Structures are given as C-alpha cells and as structure tokens.
Image (cartoon, rainbow over all chains, first blue to last red; front, side, top):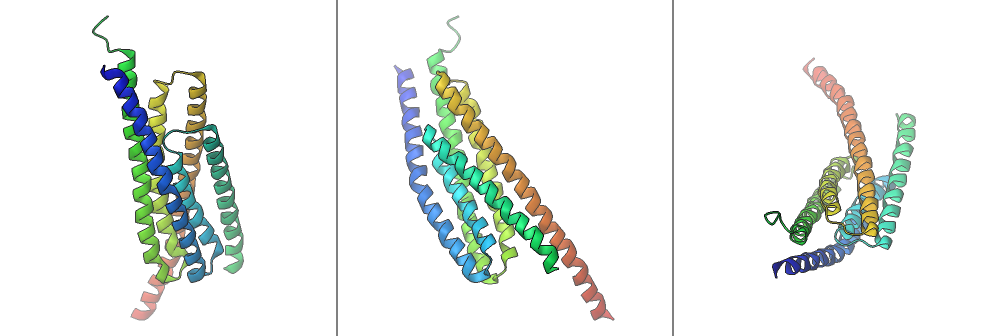
Length: 103
Length: 135
C-alpha cells in the first residue's frame, strides 16, 4: 500500500531535515561568535558586535527550530526571540540617546 | 463518493509538501547566512560600524523570507494535525514565528530609515563640498 509508505517517508524526511538543520545550527552560532569578536576588534563597537551575534544566533535558532518541534525547543525559541528583541531594543535606544550628544 | 481522495492519502501529500516548504525555508535562511558572512568579511576591513548595517539588513530580509516559508508550512500542517496537542504546538510555533516576523520587519524598516537619514545628511555635505570646489 502506498499510503502508509508516503506517511512514513514524510516523517523520515522531517527527521532528516531536523538532523541536518540541527547539525548546521552550531556551526552558524560559532561563526556568529567569531564574526562578533572580529567586529569588536576592528570597529571597537560592542553594540554592533552584539547585534551581529544576535542576528546569526537567531538564524541558527530558526534552523534548529525547523522540522519536528518539542515543547522544550519551543520554550528555548521563545526565550531566544525575547532576549534578542530586548537586547536589540536596548542597543538601539542607547545609540539614539548617544547620537544627539555626539552630534 | 469513491472519486474523492482518501483522507490518509491527502495527509501523506500534505505532509510531503510541508517537508518541501520547510526545507525551502531552511535553505533560504542558510543561503542568507552564507551571503551575509561573505558580506561581513568584506565589510570588516572598512573598520566602520555603519558598514555592517546593510549586511544586517540583507540577513534580516533572508531570515524574514525563511520565516514566511516556515509559517506557510505551519498553516499547511494545521490541515492534517490529528490531535489537540499537536494543534496547540502548531499554534505556539505559528505565534512565535509571526511575532518574530513582525519584530524583524519593524527592525528592518527602522534600520533602513536610519540608513536613509544618514545618506540624506551626508549628501548635502558632499554637494556643499563639490560647490566649494567649483568656486
């Protein structure tokens, strides 16, 4: 029968996709960390480095998030989104406060 | 009603499509990361924090596009979610991705506005310089 085979193959494909994305995500997170360090060293701007790091961590988190999702993965993704939003907002407000003073 | 497709068959087809769409979303995000890393490496020698803004905008656009694909797969999954727990998970995933997409779009718009403002303030200076040079 083709029906159970189709369902089985799609669940296998979901597992394979989750495996691929889960193995790629740490590499992206590590790249983000290295780039953030490079940004700090070249520009001396910690805010920009944190934003670069958060962007790449978000991409890594979203890749890890695709495929089968457990409640734990959902919780960690929610925390990631919250932390990223709060940190980005803090950095932007700090920049907008420092900009008029600098000008 | 034998001419209508079987529910299990439909479930198999939708699940297959969900995998394809979700994989496309992951591929878009991965491609965005690769392009952004290359652009970051090119912007590093400039030693200017503002040089990273267009790179972050590009990465943000790719992430937003990938999120759209993932949201589409969530919507497709609701068609074949059999249990209430699975539907609950889908609702949480869709809410998270929608919120993220919203905040990301706002950030992209804000960064773009700041970039335009900077270009606007830098342009008059450049034109003034040109005019002084001509005098």
